[in-house]
Length: 567
Ligand code: SRM
Ligand code: SF4
Image (tube, rainbow, N blue to C red; front, side):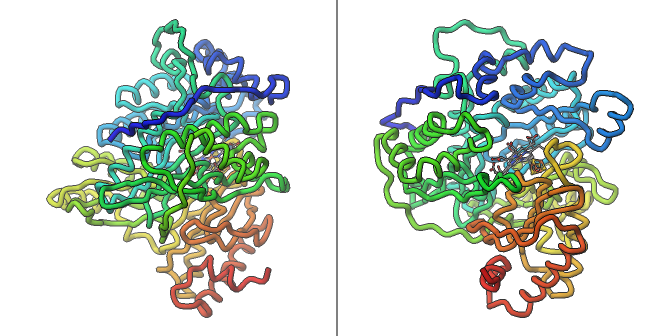
């Protein structure tokens, strides 16, 4: 299944931007000796539970973030103590596919070093929170023994590659997931620094360039790639820097419609920053997958803004240079033109819960995990339950882009034992009151995220309980309306494509956005700024009531809002 490109492109880095015009982050990367910095020696310092400013930045490229417990930040300051530093570790898991052995290892490490919890993310991977400095190495070495790593899970490089999780068309899906893995391996940094720092390997002298593609300054900013298999748009392909929409024929994947320039992040009151949907620029056959990936990424590498980080994402490079210019440059580097995009149709960006039979006669069960938080709750032992399932399950797990998990590739005769464990640990989704809750996403936010301005994961479940009261009144409990909450405008829950979105402004205050497309095809619009719960519920009550009374047959909530709102 390996892609053999007959016409590989020249990938070498051509860093032509003058060093004196580079931002501080660019100079740090350039002087880091390919991401080594002083990370290894800093880990030995026992005076502080944290690391230096520079090492913190470089460790992101290794999938590790320094954070502190924000719930006790003020108290620590009052006591003149340093912040309660902890580390977040993000695993690289292309396509969200995880074997049962890997699940058991993640579970074990979360119990040993991660505060008895692990987080499923919106890009289909695991995050450990609460890891203390001396436990970072044991955690990473424990992952290594299970053939997992954290390389490039963060940083100015190509991040975790996503792939549609729902394997209804099993053969095509398997092919696509394998391609996502190949692309992930192709685009990750090649520096040996990770092996030296975390596995204790010796530095090997070589005359070969250490980063043949990235060069010493990597990319100007993070870069996100995803594969999607219509009709599901679960990965929200229009929010990726580079999205591949699979076009299939009798023999499986024929090629891809290529989408470029998506991104969610914005800063309030800074109109130069904005969410942007990706443009579909044409079709490439499957054997050009690496060529188009290299060409697109190298355009961003060579022309992305390295002086102003707030304008460094690929979406801004496209808007600054012009889409036509960027497409021509990609084609020039690829050595071929795009064919016209082929027809495709998306129907949803959510998950299909419960049991489903795949076309190969095997089954998968998608399990609702509220906001991706795997832990043991008083009324639901999610962590214990999934560990018990991992011990008997003979297929794999698939982390979904909606923070849920699919128990995939189950033989028909294995269903009863999984059903029994789902029931024993109260995991089945039939306890969930509304389709809106099943279609909800919240980012992590407080207490770990250093950028959070308001709660998200810890608040959305309660807010939803109150919204469910409104849904019940209006007869909409079964309506799969998408709702997403982020603790700040960065948009880690991909809020700007949701039918209802809330982004944090201050404790208890949110911007409310309405009217996103049901399958992620349209950005929503800012409806009210900086409002608290009472105002949010009042506006939603009015909108949901009108929707229940006045909608047209089959009309989605987001479409209704757009149709009935004066512009
Ligand atoms: Fe994110 C930064 C969590 C998906 C846009 N994101 C962060 C950090 C690392 C905060 C920081 O920089 O200090 C958050 C860590 C919080 C914590 O305590 O764990 C964080 N992002 C997450 C996760 C865990 C949210 C979740 O609840 O699942 C997701 C991890 C994904 C993964 O597995 O790799 C996550 N982040 C996203 C997405 C969604 C996506 O990629 O599909 C986006 C919007 C898409 C995009 O990139 O445009 C996203 N995160 C951001 C941004 C804004 C980027 C921008 O262009 O402006 C930041 C801030 C930044 O980079 O400066 C950010
Ligand atoms: Fe943190 Fe903001 Fe991302 Fe939420 S959206 S995890 S608050 S950076």
